[in-house]
Length: 268
Image (tube, rainbow, N blue to C red; front, side, top):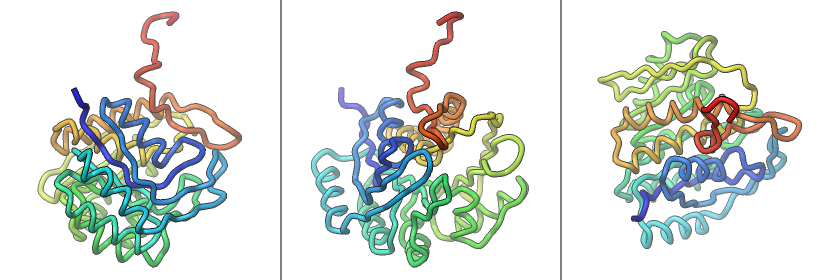
């Protein structure tokens, strides 16, 4: 049987911890067939992003049409879209695709390197977010997009309302930058789902945002509801963070294959 098909539209991470590489690993780990549209190529490692080169809009559009028109998709995930032209082109493509869309509005890398031009912010607000089934901003991206700054868990609802005002059906506000437990808020404006996980003392967390958004897309492709998909994705990412490992001289990646390599038996 053909597995559910999931398409990532994102930038490449040469270090393999985030971007398209993380997306495809996540999709495979969760039992789906991952496909890709490369939007940019980065020179990237555990220390940061040393360079980024955006692909032409026509190359992005051709990749997307090639996959969707022949193979088809059950879900789409978007990541790094560095310019207004790319954001608008991808928004147009996903709006015409009959599949749920997870938008990860990537603004900066784990190391603080900018991955989205300031001139593209309006396009994200007016074109990309309205096409999203689920948007998954972290607190820095919420501030970048809405001006709302969150300093405590009780302010997550205000952040969610500010993002929902731009039109996504659901928003997942990721509160991982707050102290205490890792708490996220999923809401469509009428119902709320609070997702909590213990904070683990592991600095090797490169790729968490990409991995979470891809995991949500994979679960949606398998037919789960948005709340079900987000809860399952949160569980998967938490395990990947626990198993994150050192790589190079900086921040290592989460372990996308943790369920395949974990040993539950004593001495295993």
